[in-house]
Length: 382
Image (cartoon, rainbow, N blue to C red):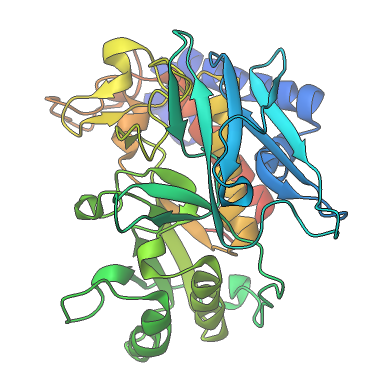
C-alpha cells in the first residue's frame, strides 16, 4: 500500500488498513454484480421515490422492509389512503405504477402534496413522508411537512458550466447560511441570495461558497443539521428551481458551490423524517441505544446495511447530478468514524485512535465509497 511507504508510523496498523481496503473492494464487487457498478447504485434516485416515465406513468418505490403494507395518497386522489397500495418484494421494497390519466397527463400533478401510509409490524398505521421525496413544504396550520411532486412543464435550463479545473489553484471559501444572509427578521430566499449576496461574495475575492442548511429540516433552529428530508432542499428559502438558479448564477461568476451534507445522523422527528420509518427502530438506523445520539437527540445510521448505503450514496449523486453541486463538507464526521461519536472522548491525535474497537469500520467503508463516487461523478469536486 502506497500510504505505508509515505508514513513509517502506519506500519503497526498495516493489517487494519488492508482489511479496510479489502472491505471497500468487496463492496465495489458487490455493487458491480448486483447493480452494474457504484455509479448505478448511486443513481437509484431514478428508481426510488416518484419517477415520471416518458408515457407519463409514475413509478413509485420505497424501502421499508418491516412494514406490513404501504400506500401512497395525496391531493391527486383526494387523500384516499386505501386506493393505491404498493406491492412488496423480497428485498423489502414497496412499489406501484400510477398509470397516466385518460387525457395522458400524470396521475400526480405538478406542485401537489402527497404522503405515504405505512402499516408497521405491530399492525398500527402512520402517515409518513417518503424518504426519497425531492421537495417538501410545511403546512402553515399543522406545521408538519408534506412531500411535493415537483414536475414543472418548463424544466430549468442551465446556462453555465461548472467552474471546475478553470479555477486558480487557491480555494477561498466563504461559509454562509442562505436563510440568515440578511438583516431583516425573516428567512432569506434563494432569489435574494442570488441577486444581492452572490455579487458581494464575488467582489470580496472568494471563489467557493460553502452553504449550510440546504437539506430539508423541520426544526429551523437546528441550523439545518437535524435533517428530515435528505433529497429535498430547504423550502423555507424557495423551490428547487430557485436553488438551481442560485448555483447556476454562481457558476457563471466562476464560483463553486459546496454544501454541508449531513450523513452522520438524522432528525428524531418521526412525523417529518425517516426515524422508525418502517415501524421499527432499526430501519435506517441501529436498533436500541446504538441507534441514538444522546447529545444531539438524533438517529444514527447503520452504515453496514446495503440499502442504507444505497440511500446515502444516491443522495450524493442526486445533488451532484440534479443541482450540479461542486462538492461537500461532510458534517460531524466524528459521528461516522467512531462508535462513541466523540461523546465524552478526549482526542490526542495519536494514530491508535483511528483503529480498534471504538472505530465504526462500516462508517469508514461508507466514506471510502462516497469519496470514490464523488470523484467518479466529478473529478474536480471538493
